[in-house]
Image 1 (tube, rainbow, N blue to C red):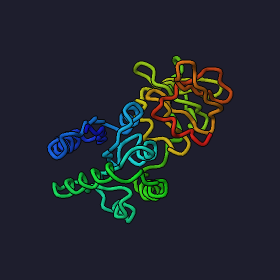
Image 2 (image 1 turned 135 degrees about the vertical axis):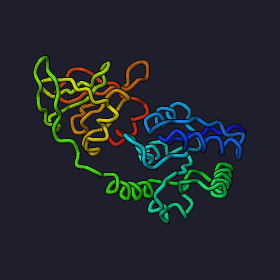
Image 3 (image 1 turned 45 degrees about the horizontal axis):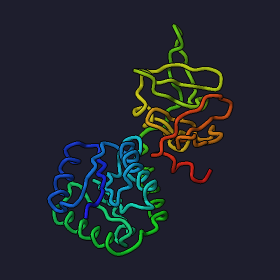
Image 4 (image 1 turned 90 degrees about the vertical axis):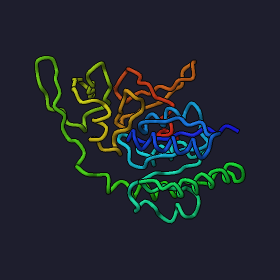
Length: 252
């Protein structure tokens, strides 16, 4: 029986090595390799994988956020170079983990556990486990204060834009639009790089090309084609909401 799986790892050599090892151990596994968390979310939204191997630390969207989004239908195995994440929750069997560099015997053990879970038990409830891991991760990932000001171009003028005034960022050709309630400007910083500098509690990625200020979101609507769009307070334009990021708005 073919089993759908994703492997999300931003380091190409480690990603390729893990995929190759999994193919040898589990020939029935159909692996979708993802270079980052965003690609993992987008892939998972399409194929609904039964298994996900997720690097905990990835830029933009980390492995814990991916796991939170797909936890209802996917068995999770985290990969990490930091053994502080090997908490008791892993040992309880709800989630497995592989410490980098990944040992062959540990991978064999993880594969065996996954086979047993797929054939036997219903999905475990992982919310509490993921919340615990998120609390472990956040203080150690915060290497610098969030971005406060943006130097942006408006025609021939350079402006200093307070980040707290920004409603959304949108990729546009080789630039990124910086949109406030009453103005917009352009910067050269790529969206992915910008996301790493923003306060993750205030700014959410909602599409590969869009980051919004969370408290500015007014409403979400699904169109006749089944695609979701969102509107921000005080703005007339609608912005795309990728299925990969709809989990952020489940409580709205």
